[in-house]
Image (cartoon, rainbow, N blue to C red; front, top):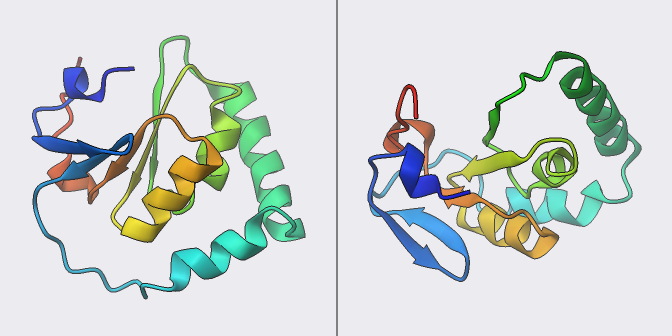
Length: 123
């Protein structure tokens, strides 16, 4: 998927991650993503939540869907959704979260807040 084809934002690509050139102050703690990253793969709660999300996507997905995991953190959900949907985009403003998501194997990763992504309405 070419994210630039569905957005008018100017992204900078670095190590497979698209970064928005705008700075944003975050209220989420810097260490928050790393703490969750250490728990997610072995956590009952994270695994159970993924099963529920997977069931809902299977039941309600549209035929032509781009799914945006907004505030997707470390990509635990996005990685799962890549197995069910062709086009998944993780949007996460936290730099450590997007690095972790990329390490996890999420293909389309954007470091930005949603309103700065400037997605087209009907690409």
